[in-house]
Length: 251
Ligand SMILES: NC(=O)c1ccc[n+]([C@@H]2O[C@H](COP(=O)([O-])OP(=O)(O)OC[C@H]3O[C@@H](n4cnc5c(N)ncnc54)[C@H](O)[C@@H]3O)[C@@H](O)[C@H]2O)c1
Image 1: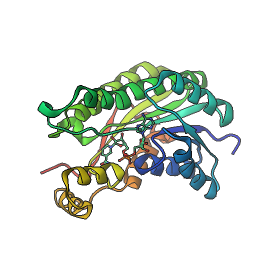
Image 2: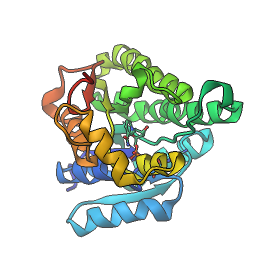
Image 3: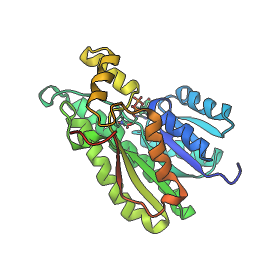
Image 4: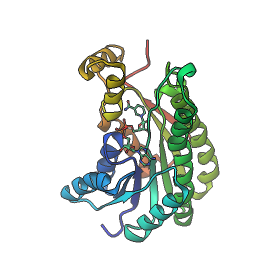
């Protein structure tokens, strides 16, 4: 494992981030699983170690500049310089525009956009030094517009512009930057949506599956597989792209 590269996955305590951390560990990376609370991230790190991988749990808020700088330095010291980064941490604060508070708008942009900016800026120093790197950002089909998600849609569309710009700036250093834009994926995030609108989660899953061409909702592993491709050595000529992983376009 000593020659293995180090991957940093944010929001890795559960859901898509946890599945991605486990997948990258199976792909041979050492994995830093970062989440708000170290003890939550440790669940993922422990599962990776139980599978024979090498993992570190890190607690940090991706929107906190000092915490991010310290966390990335800690990862570099403990696991090795992170050259693969998955900007996955995210929150929802859904509401119709006329009811959306300024705090709900700011909080969503802070975690998704400011968070991706801060972590990417800290990690790029290691990537540029290594003359190799991969950044994968989590966008969403909501980037195309979704009722009740003015804040989230703006953040996820912003992730796409951020992705393309980083691809241009970091490409000369051997770093590719791409985005994965999932459709509806079964996680705690979408379970919370069901709770908020007062619909049993199973009913929401069934309704969503009906609207998807492949007639099922996504699983975290579906998204992890796409991230794994972008992170791979063989994807070195693919950069600045957005891959929609949504079971097909909405009809
Ligand atoms: N689930 C879906 O249907 C779906 C669809 C499209 C895009 N996405 C995106 O995929 C990503 C993961 O979604 P998920 O469904 O697994 O969500 P989730 O809510 O299950 O997990 C998100 C994780 O991010 C962490 N997190 C939140 N704020 C943080 C912060 N400030 N600093 C560090 N960690 C923080 C949470 O603690 C949590 O562990 C998000 O960016 C989300 O917007 C999800």
